[in-house]
Length: 221
Length: 242
Image (cartoon, rainbow over all chains, first blue to last red; front, side):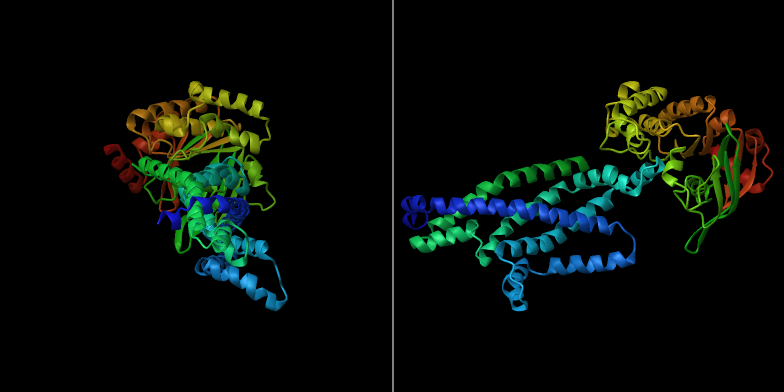
């Protein structure tokens, strides 16, 4: 059992490979989370416009990309688009797929936050001469983000975990590297090591999330 | 100072204001009373265009608020508003609440804005609460910060929308005290409220609104002691019972 799953010699051999994978997973996360947040913020801000010409397409967009499995989206971009003469490369495909998918999720979270801010806040701001945009930037968004911070963090956790999808387009992130090491050594220890690395990476975020959620519950009492 | 003429406001099929005229002279304090749903708050909100009248005209301090060429955000600095539910920004300190528009709209530096802000908080008796957040203040203190936020911009007119209705009775006095001081400094004020004691002592004119119209208006003594209309009498006797 220990020989199979926790083999020290194999671990030593696989460690540099896995470390390289960790580096790429971090780089991917650092690209994908800000992209998703930016996309989500754009969607949430658009949703504050009351025009049906904005609202309906926006709703369709968000629904579509929340219902579309990100793995399918990624494979379509990577393996489908080349048939139309568009070869984007793994990194770009991951960036686009995550922008579309997680942007829609972040967008819904932020929209809920914006809608949770009392309308009187905007009225007070406008009554002192602030423009719509100034009221949004200085009054609404700070309160909106604070209100949905646990949800934003929870979504971010999911996004970091989802970066393992990049392994299917041969991007050498943590899971991909672990599988490489596994096939080199004919032993599953590298997969166990990758799981441990994911856990160590994400556990502090999970703890932070629990604390935020507890605080949110306490403040509602 | 304020000339509003023929104000109509419809929300879909609901006709909330049915042709209201309101003239307020400089330094005058006009009180608006009336049952809930009579349109008095909507009327007040038309005076800084938080509500856009369906028809009519609103001119404040010589500025036509309904003219599309009017710089509304500039005009609103001259029209302070105080809300029933205070509407302070909970993520900012009292000073931050007071100085935001000074910095972002009036274009003051942070140092200038802070100086004006501290002075405004001192005027409402909260100089030492500048660094408190709204959540750390009582309702009466919050409403006084809201008044400071409005007067810091040196408005020509102040609008009060039921400023004491959300307060515990023991906190009402402090807010009315600030309003009385403001009145004595010569501020033009329009107040929607049922504080009859304050109206008697401070108002130049009381208007009774019902069903989207001004039923009658006059000096407080006349409206409260000898109203001409049965509807006014009914309403006055009702609020006096409370």
